[in-house]
Image (tube, rainbow, N blue to C red; front, side):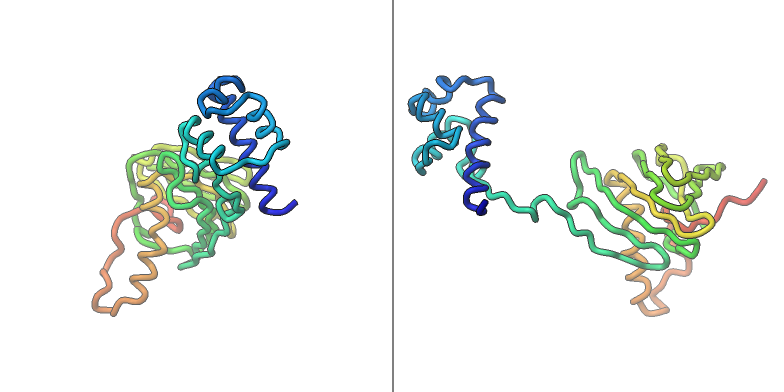
Length: 223
């Protein structure tokens, strides 16, 4: 099947699906688009070629633009090809475009026991909640005064107003995390900060990293 025929089938399916989503019969949409019900039926089932005038009338009747009705089907709009970003023992792959629904970002992280970044000596906080699942290895979640082991196949969800961080335990670990806007800014900007710090002159580097959450934090000292 050619790309043109794929698009043709998609447009016909859109017309039918949008009509049904609005609870309209063939007669109802046909009347709004100034078409006969039999013509609309043949358009939806692929037994009649669609003219530009008919597409324009149908788009207007359905309350969408012509561009939306005939939008091409492109795999690049669906498939995400994440780029590897690695600094200081932490590798990150962004698995969503920008911020997804409700400002959510999905990312995969590979953490080594040598991972370092801003706030390496401090736990950090930010508004919202974090969620992650461990794909491989074991992660130690530092949450306030607690050090919680999260094994492969397990997940963790917690308030990020509690001082927190996470690190690999006993070898590299991979996690899939879902972050809101504040979580993204805190966790994923670690790499940007490390890169800028590495390229800055020695005299311009801060004596101590700014406080924020990052993998590679040490466990709190025993009381």
